[in-house]
Length: 354
Image 1 (cartoon, rainbow, N blue to C red):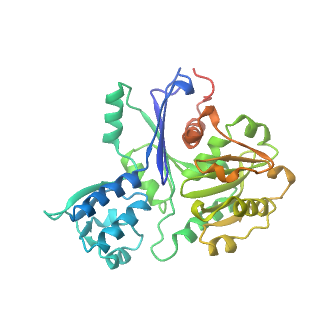
Image 2 (image 1 turned 30 degrees about the horizontal axis):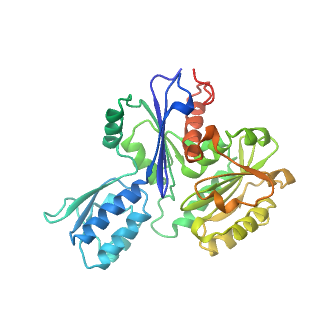
Image 3 (image 1 turned 90 degrees about the vertical axis):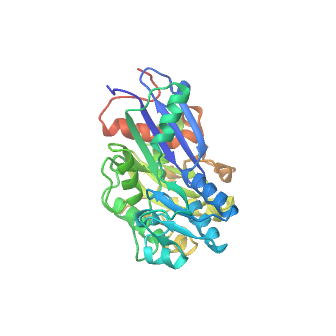
């Protein structure tokens, strides 16, 4: 039995999605939210300072870069000052020398003229305000997904991220092993969330989305034979070859560089074991990798699509569009809850309220 509510937060590049699970409540009636991603919120605050020609000081914790990094670059390009605490500046680049070269000034405290902007993938104060506003209990348990490229100050973060996936695949790649209460040291974005929410379960957004999509009825029926799950996110597209509880292959690209024709070509060759890491990396994607024991079969052609950009998959001949429990945008949150229950060895099903 799980004492108290569980809040799952799927932090993406465009949105952050929240789902509050409470014992005895149907999933359909649960508290759910889809709001702008933390990196989008922080970027807008930086842009406001840029328009006001005000210096900024970045404080808080390391978080996902994306829109924040772009906003800081635009701020500096206008000839305006940007300061940051060193550990927070790692949001912009793993190499602080590179951050200095951009023009960011590293400092422990804010200069009097600078507007403080607090970074972080999770804000407990905002969560408390939401709970207070809607008179709902503050969660006792947390599960959070972020996309973590890993700490790699000396090289490509895309390459380093895929080296992580290659290690996962080489080591047996069970889905249960991809949820952490203590993430590896090099997954610094997850570590920052863990410092904010001690005891939280951490996952990559990609694997959280895969786990959630597997809760769709059509995916459940195909899972033991084998299938492909594709999460078409706002920023990244991630595909996984799944059989039982095994992750047998990974493909990851930037959604903005894909159209339907290109996506379908990649997926067919991915399922056949013919797509190469070099091809995807050279196309400015993350890569492609297979488990040593992956054996292609026609059943992997059955594909489950989810994600806010799943329109790109219209016309795929063999598969389904997943919206577990009727809510596609909460797919990653449902995957987080499923992983949390498994990790805690709690015999709960999202589909059956206690």
